[in-house]
Image (cartoon, rainbow, N blue to C red; front, side, top):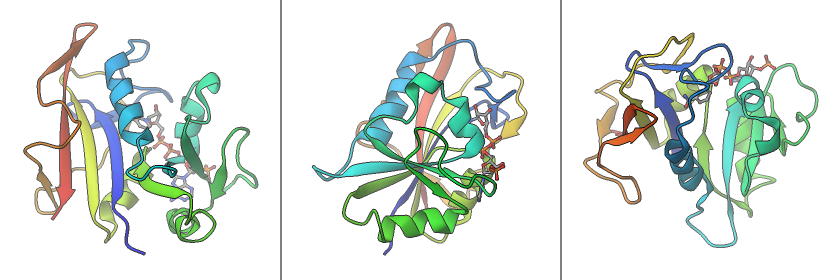
Amino acid sequence: MSRVLNGIVAVCPDLGIGFNGNLPWHPVRLSNEFAHFRRMTSTPSEEGKKNVVIMGRKTWFSIPEKNRPLSNRINIILSRQCKAPPAGAHYLASDFSAALRLLDTELSEEADQVWVIGGSSLYREMMESPATRRLFVTRILKQFECDTFLPEISEDKYRLLPEFPGVPQELQEENGIQYKFQVYESV
Ligand SMILES: NC(=O)c1ccc[n+]([C@@H]2O[C@H](COP(=O)([O-])OP(=O)(O)OC[C@H]3O[C@@H](n4cnc5c(N)ncnc54)[C@H](OP(=O)(O)O)[C@@H]3O)[C@@H](O)[C@H]2O)c1
């Protein structure tokens, strides 16, 4: 079944997404940015269904324990090493295709939108997939030290949408850090 694959990420100007297992701007909290993430990933398009978040093992463990699993969403963790889902996670998949297969089998009745929420290699797989893709990017307009990066968003493969329902267009600022929301769609 063909589904839209949604990716959501917050990036520094150099496309950095993480540092030392955390967000680059840690310990600064961008609460409204996080609320945007929560709203976008949690809101199903069909009542009675749930969205799915797919993430790598390190991203799962970067979420504070009290916030795991991400609420009102089906949490799928990718790992080649784990034999069972980490405590609190709903499903384990050994690769990206296995995660997508779950959506068409066990989760076919329950699952609505699919959201890839990191890290690097998962964003790469999602961005290179033949499916229709949308990338919800928060451009953090300040550079922090980073050791984990988003692949380049190629202009040949993605177009920046002029607007998207529910995504604010104006410049945001929290704790002295400016950022803006962007949405790209595969061409
Ligand atoms: N800024 C943002 O929006 C954002 C979003 C997400 C994460 N982050 C940050 O990014 C960092 C974590 O990302 P990361 O790239 O280092 O790690 P990650 O992708 O979250 O996790 C890597 C691990 O996930 C598993 N994995 C990944 N791809 C897989 C695949 N295709 N098939 C099977 N297993 C797969 C492997 O687990 P095993 O080793 O168990 O096999 C791999 O070692 C943290 O600093 C986090 O804070 C930032």
